[in-house]
Length: 416
Image 1: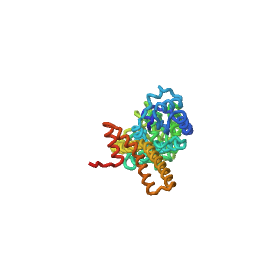
Image 2: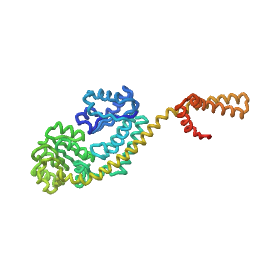
Image 3: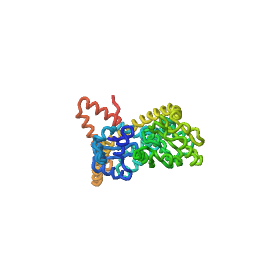
Image 4: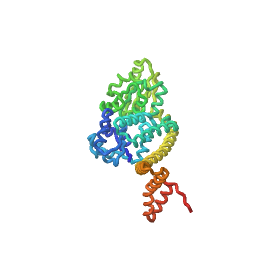
């Protein structure tokens, strides 16, 4: 039985996600510990800043939940309200959606696909990825490729954060060579950081009134944190500025930006003000070399892309639904493998026994034609003995079911 359990940005706040995150350097050790101490046949762990998920082939998820709480020393009661567990069909659907970017904070973002591939690689290296999970993840990667190649998922803008990235890419040829400054550390800035950092900028800085909270966000994206009071000193060193605080008054004034532009020798600076009331004085937008966008500006970009993105998501969900049924069919066919193997083993034993018997008769000088005839009769009788006996002993509905099964298995046709 395949299942998955975990928490993500939909189900749990950052404070909880941090407590059950797995360090990449210790992931091999964690996989080994789980399979050694619990009755788990196959396992892979996907741990990112937005989710910790354990994919397993085991009898029950309870033993894995117990291990997770003990491994991270988290009380079960603290984790339970945020933990989700998916049964086999839903696990397949969930894996396909995650790989395709439909379950991400940034809908359609491609980064999660690479993270899933890393999780699979670590599980393979640890020897914990068996036939079922290997097939599940390979099919997930295939579905993700199909979704991205046949739908417009990821191509349109459906959030303020995505709109900010879109507009920034109009100003700068590539974000990966720019320095980004985030002002604030709330949910909106967290979402913006996820979008911008998916483009792998050259430098990331978080300015916040509370340095500890700013540092927590910055570390998630390999960035640095500064105090809000030091904003004036750091502003000239950043090409992109995204601000969203709860300040009742602007925190970036015209004079501060004028000094920054002069220090930058008039290199362009892109600014996004998502705060209401504004964090950046309106007059800043009138400066040369400053490109300032407000919430209303971004809303227009979002509106233009929403309809087409919704259609792409619906289309992607349809693709995933079909591929889930195909994978369930594959799993069902796997259930017959032990029976088929046992049937073949039994027939092979009979064959070897009868060949040995025939060889002894030939050694005694029996005519080959007679030995072959004898061999064929004995082998036929042995192969048909068990099914014939079952048909003879069956009664009522069982007999009808066995007769129907025998007709299908042996391609029998009525003589009536």
